[in-house]
Length: 221
Length: 219
Image (cartoon, rainbow over all chains, first blue to last red; front, side, top):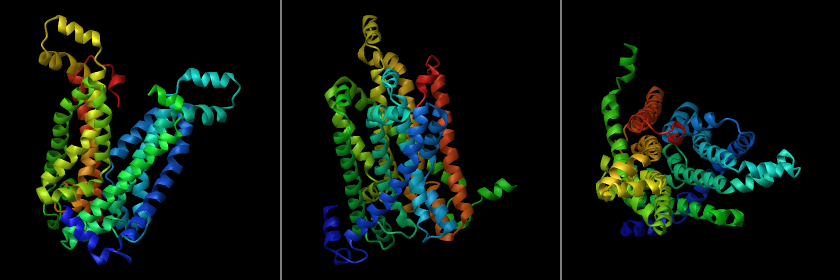
């Protein structure tokens, strides 16, 4: 394994240019970031609404189940064949579809799990509904909301690899090209970089949740 | 007649529909079962020694964050482009869902019940199999359902590394031949299979633990 990695990192083909490591990492991060932001922009407001109103438990649970069962490779290929291999939406839409259910489910459940007496107290203090939502419910539900965002981000980073199966760059390029060129060291190198990137995403979100979660909540956990 | 023609795959798929179905079921269900066998003792240990749980949970979470394609290609070096590669990877991923499920399940067993079993003269093994496991079963089964569904859909990514991955092969060959109906068939088969397994497992759990409250079994 180490021998393969040494071979990969010393190959001049991957040092610079369009197939360079940094270029591929930048592409990978860029695709993942776009998909993640789109998913958060769809999932968060929707879940804040349903969680605050306390409606839609059933449909959201069903959506999460269907989202888990949906194979992203199939969705990417389907869209690629339908709207074209070079159309970025063919990669973007499946990634967003992958990331929305965990965000939606955990945010909704987080808000639903907030102690009703806390919400009542906030209302009793004369807070308006929006104040209750953003100053009481969201901070209390933050651990779960962030864990949902973390799951979504890690899955998006992992699955962006598959965008290379159609025509896109990112680190999956090394895996797919290496497999078709029978260069196993390229495959291993690409896989190694993807693992680094997704573990880095995990660490990033752990750091964010350490900073953002109110100390009062942490004590109870 | 129409159904028969949909399931007759073109020759370049190199498998029959039933062959793909068999491969899909064997690897994804087998891997989940193997993951369950491994996570039962791990979960039991984590429930008993509380200090053990956070590091184990961290470890399985990191393992789960490894992209499936990367894990598949690392394993090629050891097990080749075979179904064993997919099996090992999927079993490893299932741990991230199953270990917390087992720990939560074991923790739902009230201490009085364990003491009562002890007082009735149950040995540790008998207490585990006849008292703790049945009480933990609804929570564990909820985790098993989630793990089964996700390993069925994850397995399709195996098609990227070669002629494996069950219905996933319909995606890769569909892309290569630009055959949209093949891709639709694969998507449809995978989703239906996953939801069917989910429903069957829920039914099995109701039969096994008829006393369990419906609400507690919901995942």
